[in-house]
Amino acid sequence: MKKKYQAKIFVTLRPSVLDPAGTAVQSGLKQLGYDNIEQLRIGKYMELSLTAVDSESARQQVDQICDRMLANPVIENYRFDLVEVEAFSGVS
Amino acid sequence: MTKFGVVVFPGSNCDRDVAYVTNLLGQPTRMVWHQETDIADLDVVILPGGFSYGDYLRCGAIAQFSPVMPQVIAHAQKGKFVLGICNGFQVLTEAGLLPGALVRNRDLHFICDRVRLKVEHNHLPWTQAYTSGQIITLPIAHGEGQFYADAATLAEIESHNQVLFRYVGDNPNGSANDIAGICNREGNVLGMMPHPERAADSMLGSTDGLQLFQGLLAKVATLV
Image (cartoon, rainbow over all chains, first blue to last red; front, side, top):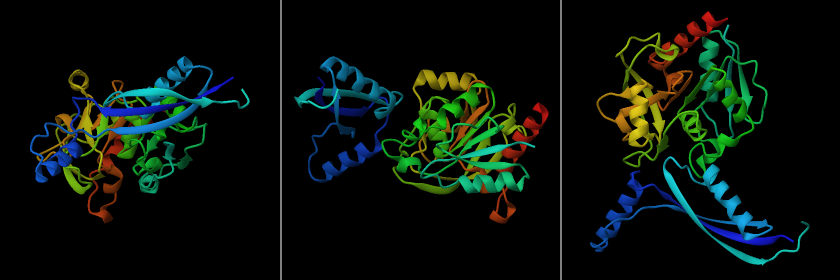
């Protein structure tokens, strides 16, 4: 029986890549009076639902998906949290 | 005759500009819908500018997995010519045919302008109709044209003379080493942010981009 999982995926720019948009937002915060902000970098957050036989195969698949498409390893890092959301009783 | 194919992704918008130029040069040209899987008849594949798949996720991120792309990669691996202009350059880096990546312009603006470029060398078909060190002016129009590669990759690109076009004077987008266009190690795949096809008819004020196509034609003619 397949189970249903949800992956919460975070894609962030590698530290060596400049983030001009993050810098612009940071300066906006400074304008607001928050002068103790040391750094702000903008990334992406994605939620992905999938079915898999177990958490290990779900994890492997999400990892592959991130590596192939959701993140570009040349400029980005990724990490994700995986949770089982409910028993899934669809056709396996 | 050199047979050109211009790949049309959903969201491409410079495809017909490219075909206008290859037709102007009297070459057979066909538009290749991104779902086609047979491009064996082509000598040169061009990935045009535009906003393939709305630039969703990252520029070129989704287009790299279009059904035509394995054929484009195979075409390149045979040593045949592939040119990516603007969004096409972004697709080529995403697909791994060219090193590095193109990220948001340093100053965050979409830039639509004409820029001065230095032709780094003319040892490849792409630039053989120019002189080494020649300064040309081509249009640019992009929001994500800042070339990025890590230090090791940049050093490798430079040491193999893979930079063909470099911004002169003002670097418009913050590209590493002022890079505007690079080729692969073998020299048969070129990606560039400037638009040579928009400067190939004197009616539009400049023909600085025409020699790129002419140099390529001269090379392919010697292969037949």
